[in-house]
Amino acid sequence: MLLDEFDPLSDDMVSVLDNDGRVTRKGWKQPVSDEEAVEALKQMLLARQADTMSVSYQRQGRMFTYPPNLGQEAIQVAAGMLLREDDWLVPAFRELGMWLAKGVTLKELFLYWRGHEDASRFEHATNALPLSVPVASQITHGTGIGFAVKKRGTDQVVCACVGDGGTSEGDFHEGLNFAGVWQVPVVFLVQNNQFAISVPSHSQTASRNIAAKGRAYGMPGIQVDGNDYFASYEVMKEAVDHARAGKGPVLVEAVTYRKGAHTTSDDPSRYRTKEEETEWETRDPINRLRAYLEAKNAWSENEKQLLHEYRKEIDRQFLEAENYGPYELEDVFRWHYEEMPEELRRQKVAYERFLNWKEAQA
Ligand SMILES: Cc1ncc(C[n+]2csc(CCOP(=O)(O)OP(=O)(O)O)c2C)c(N)n1
Ligand SMILES: [Mg+2]
Image (cartoon, rainbow, N blue to C red; front, side, top):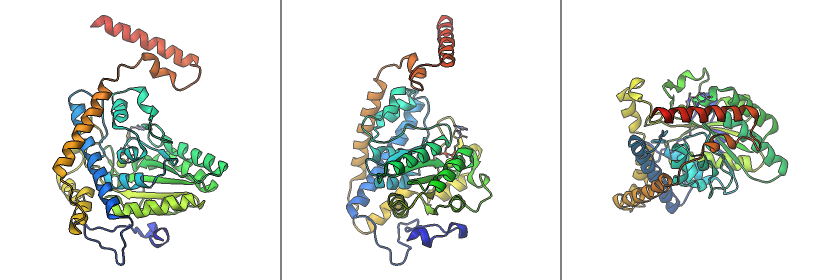
């Protein structure tokens, strides 16, 4: 069991492939079929293409903002493949590969970043919570859902996601503490992408790593190379199986790198060096999995053609989002409570007054 073998207190990290896609672990057996690995690589390419185009849509003024997932595809696709339809996904805001696996459409995600409230409905996805921008607030929700699942006695698993920066929030610690005490079926997945906007992850904690924190809350913690698809798959599989078997929560720290900006309003050249970016480029998750598959003659896709098809489909869904229609002012206020409380009603009136004033200025 990797969960027993790899000790976060010794800074162990699970990995399988080196930067050239060669297997480095002795006695390793491929955990999925070649077909599944090929499918994973295709999903990673789709996610990356959607990301690249999203940044471009935003630059064209067609989307308000966007947080790129570039470079974080391996852990996201691996985790997504392991969630059952009735498992719960409790995301932060940078989980593209997992959303797609859950059945969330690109159209819905585009609609979200265009500021539309309807985007949070996820019509074709079961048990996927809306995006959570208030950092780490979703962790307590994930624990709560895990508590409910346990009370009902079903074998569903909750995957609650957070970033390295989110682990400094109180919600993270409350959520993990409660989860440990009640042994709920939750996998806490930290995508440690090295940054919380401009703050480097080593400034978030005096711990040796984030995975080690699991110990204090009475759950296994494990560090994995999140840019290594197979390692990510193996670790997430053990974590999900552990939770599903009623053995309680697990903390997974996936070590990765945010290749893009924090969001389209950020400029990473202000706080990190070209050398660092170049160094991480050699660990790119797509290149590593592709090199592995090519070496065993398992990758025969015409990538150019594939990307061409992806671009067409992404554009089609973007146009659907763009032509969706405006949202009502009411939508901004009406989803929090069954009946709008007085304070929200007051804010709505004030906002209407502001919009009328703005229109009069034009
Ligand atoms: C409670 C809260 N504080 C601050 C912010 C502003 N903010 C948005 S994202 C972010 C950094 C998050 O970093 P991390 O958890 O590492 O996730 P990443 O963006 O790297 O995926 C901050 C500070 C916020 N959204 N919510
Ligand atoms: Mg981060």
